[in-house]
Image 1 (cartoon, rainbow, N blue to C red):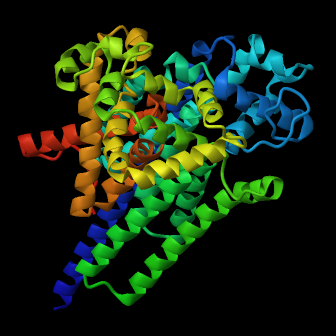
Image 2: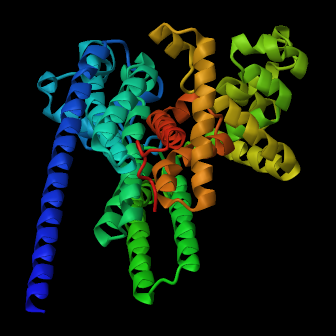
Length: 500
């Protein structure tokens, strides 16, 4: 008996030693993987310098530049040309990062004006802030792939493919990288929050809950829509968690720990977001993230007043219009002045909105009228409002097949449109499938992207750039489906580890 006991102990010791060796080996592989990801992200960031030019900073991007300038020079985050006053129009994080660049970059040591910042050599330097965001985006592409694909070599290869495709379709496109819009910052933070969410649903610790809450709060302070998307996203994770507890015989202690983790997640996200909401309440008496919501929703619903089939025709790429003309009953002349779809231009143009206000004899704040118009349309024509969601989803899904992208990469746009459509449908299908089967990992990985797509279709004019930040997630979802399909076809495991 003593000899048998000694043999068992020897086997156990050897087994523990082997497991310890495997654990050390696994940590070493993870270390080299993350180091490779950092290196690739650094190169990705460095390439930014070759993409930016001294082209003028215009439109919404100019708001961010002016607000950063005044924050550095006067301490006021205002976007006026001179005598800045606090503003409620733009979210703070992109402005804070630009301001940090203005403080530390040697090109800004000498005196300069707002005009010099937004046009000329200093404009190029200011746009280099996108290098920071591109670094974050590339790093979290690698980290998210590490979570979704168990084989580290495969994960690294797929991360590089995603990075290359995202570069061509989004990150290196001049309208994104050579501007100071918030699409690239949003893409970086969406990837960070998605990675944080996957980590959280695997191990619901207090630390991971707090980090996910910080990520979602930062995302809301970059694009205000993510305050609402984040709340919906957390609700989805809670619902999937509840179903898992309902199906399993889970100890009460585990339920208590999970509830505490979700409470920390919600409180952290709200605490981060509340910093800006409280500031706006103190400054303007409005407890909100920005003042653009009414105007954006008003535009959206004014556009929804137009014929739905006409909108499908108008929002289709030119190469597709000839195909769908017989089906929709519309023709190119309908888009011209006096045509049946002239109202689409009417709804989208701010001067035309002002004309409509004047015609109706309205005096007061434009946003108030837009809010009333939106509410009236929703009450009087609820079916039209619901049907328009599909139309605007169609309008906003072409974010990877914009004519500028096709021209930038030199590919026939029809090919790009087809690939774009397949990729977006696969992305949405993977997310919905994950929700149906209760796969928390995939729902966490792609939920924020799907949430942005749905939010854009429901509440905005669905400009294609609004959905552009989810480009890397769409590509990762396509790669996941390809590896899963290969695994099924060849009867061997070549990829995904996105299971519970």
